[in-house]
Amino acid sequence: MRRNDNNRYKILDRYILLKYLKTFVLALALIITIVITFDVSEHLDDFLGSRAPFTAVAFQYYLNFIPGFINLYSPLFIFISVLFFTSKMAGHTEIIAILGSGISYRRMLRPYLHGSFIVAVAVLLIGNFLIPYNNVHLNKFEERYMKSKAMSYYTNLHFQSAPNTQVYADNYDVTRMSASRFHRDIHNANGDLVDRVMADIIIFDTATGQWYCNGYYHRTVKDGRETLTTLPYRTLVDLKLTPNDFNESAQRIETMNSVKLYRHIQREKMRGTGNVKTAQIELFQRLLTPLAIIVMTVIGVAISSRKTRGGIGLHLAIGITIAFAFIVFMKVSIVFATNGSLPAFWAVLLPQFVFGVASVFLVKSAPK
Image (tube, rainbow, N blue to C red; front, side, top):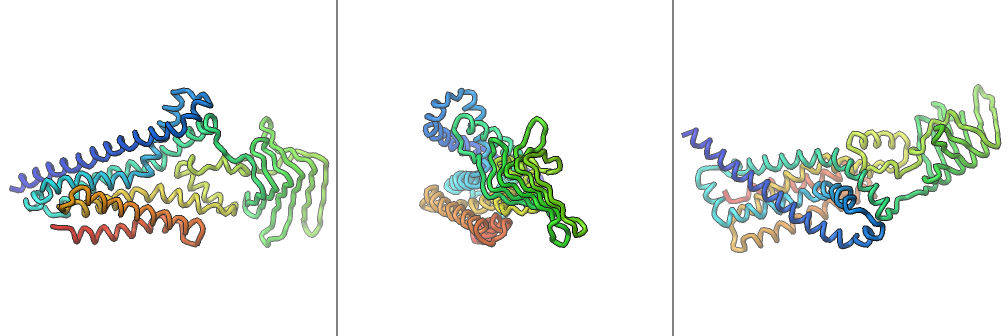
């Protein structure tokens, strides 16, 4: 008897898991086709005007665009897929037959959870490692063929390049790799200024890997004695800066895998640049978005497993409302984190936590 029960469970698990994954893949294929169609119509003038080759459009742009789209909207696609095929099962009284055979509601949820775990792991790997690689090629394509408006000039720069070392510049030109009205101050443990380098302009020479400056000024303080050196021009040998320290466009967080992004966050904290929150939100979204897939799966099952007169239409209407509420909640929490005092971790986790609690209540209230 126990062997028959095990076989019955395995058949049910395979049946639901296959429906789960198949419906998700079909929904992705359909929506991606629609999105690409609209995107081609929107950017066709850019492609033709820049004479972008078909192979570059297909393989460098759209092939790298698709994984990011999947990762961004995978919780929504999963939710709609679960609503669709579970509602059909309920409409065909398959849910009633499953529960009537002695299988508990929680046991019926198991293949759904297995499917959500498979998709969540795939999204975790794609979001943390594949998509940053894709974004590198996307940026190259956009800069070459779509006239990307990447910033090439920055003003009022101030950051910490090393412990007790502050760097200032009125502006930095990315193309020329030059900074004007440059200051570099070094302080001791007590906060007193012990070394200051100033220049009217500094320019990086890629051939030698050195900075050259005009209007050189160097002041040092040691043992109470001050030394001042001024020169019309000089090579800055011990500056210990690279163009990437100035060039914010070289630090595009979407092109970093999560390991590099974590190191970037730690480095920016040390530099005191003040733009750590955006990078933290990006990192936590990559790490915590897979949880939303599991949460939305459970909510989808709890809503659509009940047989109603409205059928799939009613379930989809309720589901779209919930999905919209989830997206709005997530956007609002991120705004509070970016412009307020809400920590980045809680900005990403809070919507998933609230809807996770809601999913527990929905499962408890679902017909057994």
